[in-house]
Image 1: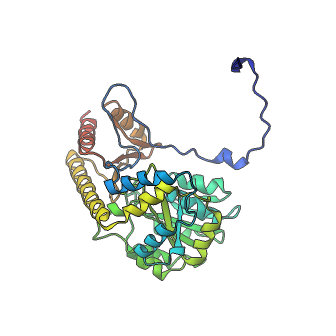
Image 2: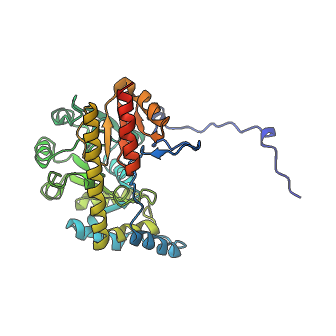
Amino acid sequence: MPTTPDRDAVPAPPETVRLRSTLEQLPAYVAGKPAADDGMRRFKVSSNESPFPPVKAVRDAATAALEGTHRYPDAAARELREALGTKHGVDPSQIALSTGSVAVTGDLVRALVDQGDEVVYPWRSFEAYPILVGSHGGVPVQVPLTEELEYDLDAMAAAITDRTRLVILCTPNNPTGASLTTEQIEGFLERVPEDVVVAIDEAYREFHDPATVAGTAGIFRRHGNVVLLRTFSKLQGLAGLRIGYAVAHPRLAAALGQVTVPFGASVPAQAAALASLRGDVQEELGRRAVWIRDERSRVLAALAAQGWQMPSAQGNFVYFPLGEQTASFAEFADSRGLVLRAYGTDGVRATIAEQEANDLLIEIAGQWRQR
């Protein structure tokens, strides 16, 4: 009978591989903290996940697609790209798909940034940006937000140099919630050289007030250096399937296709994303977006009544700019059953989740102020 070797008795071989020196400077991506399994009822509102599961028609499409997962997915994702092309009024070849909009952002860096080239983005913003830029040899140029946690577009324009290849605008901004208007984006683009790509990351667009959301479709049509980033992870509730895309002009779209991981969009992900574009599913998703916006307004109103001064919020989350009290507030909430997302000594983000979780957030925030 074969025996299992005692691993403790076998010395590990020496590792002499050479890692890239840039890894020493890379920040680690910190995912939303999971809820502890300690018997207490807990709500995880640390990852900006949807409180709703996918619509039934979407679940059914993904489940049915499992029958074909012994085959590779359609690498061109023709059916999905045709549907998205119709949605955005572009040729299907202008849709670049990958495993979430974060992966498409990584493709942008690979397609545009040579060693030592710069990428400009606001800070604080999406935590993956410095990792994506630095891991591919780019130089992250982080432009601080204003004291009101809004974009400092003047400073961002001034930060652009001859080595800048990409600018990222996350609107609504994760984690702070601020957003940009059409006029602000257009004014900024007037100050950006036409050979510098401006990526507008709209992962949270569906949660924005429809009356004031930026007209990025028109901006895209008017500017050959603009690319739009979208995801199915948030409102559509497909975070676990990993699928997102870019709407790009032809030359850049072709470059994204050159550098992306082949077969990145899986069979179930493509099926689920395609089903999410059905008219009846879009209607249900629209109702869910209204519910989340209404809950966000309710939460913000309750916090304001407690004396909190909260920054603008247009995503599916709210942000507490707590500074040095960030970790303490997150621990205070965790001990009471609510798992939040803490950002160093900057602040805490809370996802708008189930109503019970939102009620608990309001309760905890009130208790914190009354200490």
